[in-house]
Image (cartoon, rainbow, N blue to C red):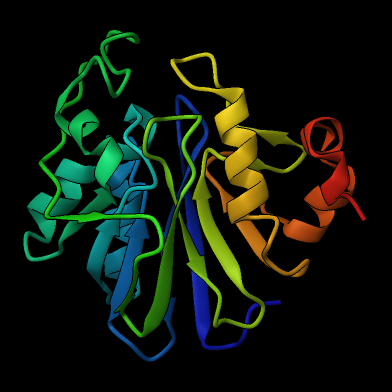
Length: 223
């Protein structure tokens, strides 16, 4: 279980059953909001209920289901910087790149205030965060790694799921995605929790042992 001071709440948005995350420490009024989706109203309600303001709004990647709430969050909290990986930034304001045009619901996000890159580390809202770029699902998808927490955890977007991986048929690359999972996630400890963009949380150890994609494509990384 996460340490007592750590709070993580999930807001699931339809129509894609996408997970947004609000992460904060008890006793603080700052939070991190990850991947605000279509149900921005529930995210804002959650923040108000707990007396929180976003220190940052962070996107794991630029697909529409993960950025649809950016505008509402920025409208409500204009001082909160919007953060995304450098190589997915162009998708924020391009309905073709963020796939919203494909679904007939064109979405244009505010531009990013800060672009992050692979290996970058920063602190916000009382957390130390490392950025790991893992393309393959999107050109510049990033995972946000909280290695100093007990247990460690990752806000991973659509890279690694419980029993699955992100889809690569929307201009992605299976080889690139599996290489990124191997190099950027499977080096983490087994107890590291993965909070994915869809579906339930899992752990590195569980996926190392039972994820069929890891078993098929990365057999040397199984224990």
